[in-house]
Structure formats: C-alpha cells, structure tokens
Image (cartoon, rainbow, N blue to C red):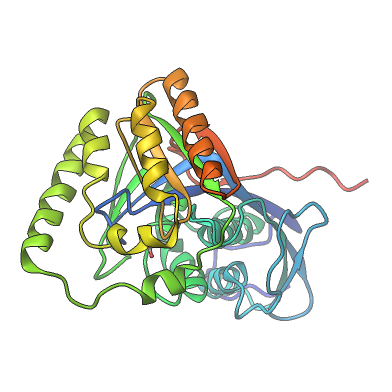
Length: 327
Ligand code: HSE
C-alpha cells in the first residue's frame, strides 16, 4: 500500500464507514447561501482498501436506492477520489453505498453521499484530514450531481448546524449552531425534481426592488436564527421573492401544503432545496406532529403521496460509523 501525500499518514483500517446527515437548504430567501443539517435521514458509506487503483463503486444489499456506479459520475465516487488525492494515496478504494435518502427529494441526498464518502476514506487513515480540509472534495462531489458548485447542502452535512456559505466562493462559510427547541416537520412528496432542472428554470435577471426585499429578508432571517426567535425565523423563510415563486409551480400542492402547515400552528413553511420536499418550523414536538400530519394530508388531498417526519437540527455533521466485525 502506497501513501505518498503526507509523511504522517498511514493506513489504520482496511475498512471504515461514515454516516452523513440530510439537510434542508435555501431556508426560503437563502438560495445557495443557507442550509441546515437534520437528523431525520442520512446516507452511510463504507470505504474498503483494495489493490486496484482508483475508486470503484457498489451499492449495499440494504441500500434503499441505487444509482450510477461510474466513479466519475457518482457523487460519492468523485468525493472519495478527491479525498484520496488530498491524502496522496495511490492505491484504490472500494466505496459501498447504503443509500437511505431518496435522490431528487430535496433534502440533500447527493450531498450526504459526498460527505459520507469523504469521511469514510479519511477514516481509513485515522481521520488525518480536518473537515475544513475536505470542503473542496465534497463540493466537487456535489457538483457532479447538480451541475453547479453550491455548498448549501454539503457544508451543513459536513459540519452540522446551519451554514451560511458564500455563493461566489463556497469554500467561504460560517456556521451557526441551532438551538434544540426548533422542531422541523418535513414532507417528501412522491415526485422527483432534479436539482439540475430546477436550476435551469430560474431567471437570469430579477427586478431590483425584489432583490432588495430579498436581501433584507435574508438578513433578518439570519438574525432570528442566531437568536432562536423561531416565530420571526418562520416568517422570513416565507419571504423568498426570487426562487420559490418559480419553483413552487413544480409542485401542484405547494400552496395547500403551506396553508395547512400554518393553519396547524407552524411559524413558517417553505420548499427545501430545489424541492419537492417542504419543511415547516414549530417550537414544540406536539405542534410539529400536528403540522406534519396536516402537511401530509394536504399533499395527499392534491393527489400526491408523501412520506413525512418530525425532526430536529443536527449540530454535529458527519460521523464515523462503526462497522460490525466480519464473521
Ligand atoms: N441551493 C440549491 C438549489 C439546493 O436550490 O438549487 C439544491 O441542491
């Protein structure tokens, strides 16, 4: 086994694995700028050292979803390969994906795989790379999935909490820990919206006045988030004037679901990422459960099945997942 990148690196394990959380991104007016990691779901990835050079991909028998096994098209494959480059490791790694988050659902499915793959590879060597050192690798993984470099899913999945990321340079970010009194109801309508397509439909130019109102909503939202003022946070997540008015049309039950969430007591409700997932925020588990049920019923009344869950923010981000011993 050859390791040439860092003098201090040595192989610690032949097999390692990691779990990375799903994330809700944009949070209303924070298109490509804001994302929050959530505990509800996560992808697990195993990394196994092998003598074949490069990265090979397979899906575990318990994987709920499968996708491409081409390592240069697969988000986990690209992220793993970039991580190996940073480490300077020249032999190969097999990546085994346990995909739990539905692709195209709007809760950071590709990002979770990219992040878990990078951390699993890092764990083979005893985690010599910090999360900061893996930002470029996970951004590269996300880019193959969506066709653009945006960090509002991968960076929350890596670090946990809410992340504010620079749209101009996603390697610039700030992290905000989320108080534990925020409860998030999420529905996943059973339609698939691919991020790449949902980005292609956005306008190239927007009216100046809309941009100003949008900027003020984003600033107020971040202040509310830092204060844990969930009533204000909920109001501001519904003030996206640029993106959601366009994308909301992709989901026929969008307005009904939002109306149901608010009637059931949520402080606010918005699309998660490029949709079709929608999330609503509340301050108690009981209200959040009522909201979840109301959102789900409204979606189904519109003829679209949905799965739904109540969850909380994940403040830790990716973590190593201990593999059972092979008998
Ligand atoms: N900010 C991204 C978008 C998130 O809305 O297109 C989806 O990956």
